[in-house]
Image (tube, rainbow over all chains, first blue to last red; front, top):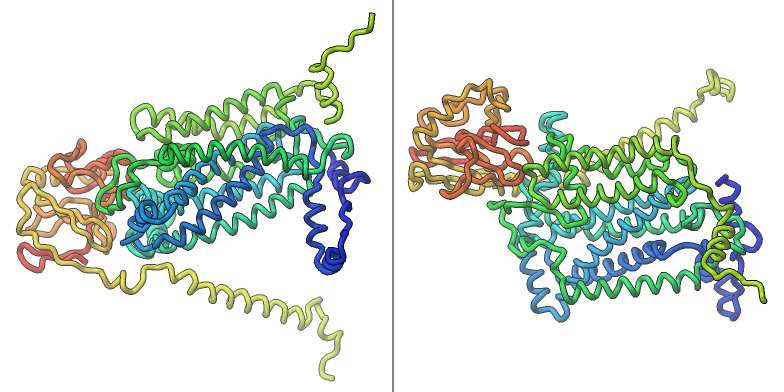
Length: 435
Length: 194
């Protein structure tokens, strides 16, 4: 796992570079002026470990959902009116009167949910196989920044519906900034009124949320480009967590081998996507948001969309307003630091007998926080919310550094090739000497 | 020649260094100043600021009844309190309160007595901004059938903050009493808010 081995991935003879030869007069002419085809050919030939599993397909699945969200979103913006008086009605009109308007909107709404579903699996995969460790720290951190952009975009998009849940979610979340009043009196109020453009959530707020909901995804696209660039520099991780040593034996060019595999995965998830869009489009949403926004009536139970529930549970677990805000943002900020919080030199949990279990405890913790976030903040839910919030931070800040120091890794294969060969031996029937 | 290169470089500092620092400082200050309009355009605009006052006729509000009006996009709770509710609010020792400030907009360090949160001679009228100081929900307690919480005032269903009959925070996560907007009686039963 030294830096030499990283460099060898892309520069060793026998890597899949420099295979492009322009064949026609036009492509030769273009290649001398703008080598865009050469770039694409080189780019798509990235040596990719041949042992990666289907869980590695979630990167491509995320790219698919990003495109779906951009297309459907640009179409929705053609029908949506970002004005508090008619925003809700413009969406109802889209749903009822516009040809296929319902399809455009449900695609965007369900697409957002599946985008988060995919990103969570993608992140958990990175955590299990140690994909955040050297030399992939920057790749991982750009990923966390992408996740933050996704959250901001999804929150702002949800507010545009201007239903009861939209309105009150914006009210509650923007009011989080008023907690700065406890640092310096008046500071929080000034920030909140600046965000609102008034003395309450109103039309100016909706207008700027719409503008930013359209803008942030392009920042996201730029970050994705950096993420993919960083991936091409360091190469994909793989289930063994061992760096590629022999490009010829241990990798395959990304295209056509993994484009094909990823297309299959995308097709599978697209079936799920279509099923939800056509048969249960509102299953993941909250019915209260089909009531127009009313600034005089708070819904009895304010809950965010499912993908924010764990963070909402952390926010509510802390009895102080400022403390809750710090904990909620801290829960995401801590992810930026895990490349250094994890002290183990072994990447993959496959060879980490203790941390493997702690990973699954963490997954359970995240799911439990999600469930608690959906429940009213009263009775024993408050207590359990606090228990699981504490564990969330203990996992990263205590267990991750500590376990790396005390754990004895299980025996590891010499290389990816070695691992693949051993697997092949153990699964194939043993050769029996002829009698 | 009045100066030579040697003169310029005395002490390791020359004129060019000064020009670099001066240029960078000028660009930074100019850049920051140019940013300000881009930030300030988000603040409440002139039309929002000018919608500052409304008049409300209190005559139709019966004792024990409450109404909600909208001022600057915020709900204003106006309750015609029963004498026993006023007594209950007056009987509270300010030292017991979580927030000892009256939270009357435009004042500071005013003790949170019921008298300070109402107008002299008009104690039965409580006029306040009906927004929970926790995260901005609208507390329950305006309608007859609403849950008013253990202190008989208002109860926020979002995170369980309870307010007394003077709108002061008594229980739950909210940090402050509900605010009293600037208002005055223009007639015996008419107020102007703002």
